[in-house]
Length: 383
Image (cartoon, rainbow, N blue to C red; front, side, top):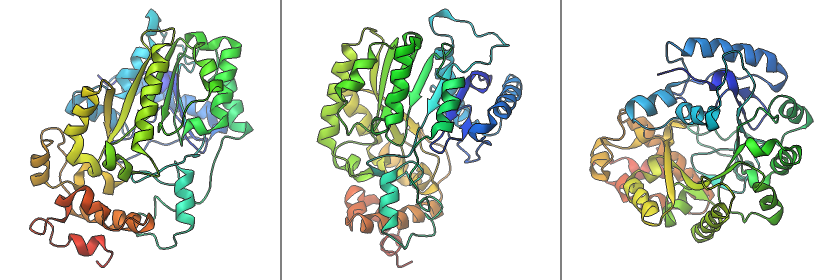
């Protein structure tokens, strides 16, 4: 089924304030058009037309959900959002175009520089790339962002007028890192004081590196449901490699703290879960990580990275996919050019972070001379 209520009742506002109806990443890399926040009326017309078309076909830009549902046979943003739109037995009428499902990224303020990320979502990456002039051509499109963003009053006025209303049922804050962004606390406080929060499921996607203050915690019980999603893409040293400037032990302790917080929330369905980005750098640990979180009673789900190309599972050779036990879980063709980009970009990052040789320590298979006789030369930037 392709019908998607987000096109009619959803909004996604990115770090610069542009809007779309969802944040799902298309698996083929072709993005939908977005609108500036002062084009809200145009955005609604566009979304309603797409909603009607979605009743009979999958639309361009929706392949991320289609891939998860039809190939991976797992929940997608489309199916998960449907549960929120109709929670507590509510029926959304066809002529109801109010925003009920919102995903808000109120800026790129973040304290980590994750390897599949860039300055568009991380102020930490902006800081790093300002001191490093020579960026590989393979990565330059992702790392040419030299500015930090946080929502201005125009962005906030759109949210107060059209999103933060009594119609809202699901609100997700992502980033950047939302727990570092004062606009997030401002919006949470507003919903609580207005009384709108009592019918809202509040979802916060955090990197888990920061302890939530008492001021944050004081507003949580006013929400119908609380969901804390912790972005963790590995375990132990592999996690720290992927998420530069992170600390595994500290994040693990915070996850346990979040679990206790949610357990004490008034709604028993509230939860903490791991939001795991399945990518080339953790492909060899994917099954191990899945088991580790399960064994430690930590909820876990994953999304497959489709962009940038040097982070995708297209970088993983078929022989290695078989070795890692993932050959039946991912079906897109291996691309050697993407694997070479992985070597070159992560070689640049390792030198930037003063971790020369760290990629080989994380995954020696990438430097198997029989499979990849070119690997070391490309990694070192000599090819």
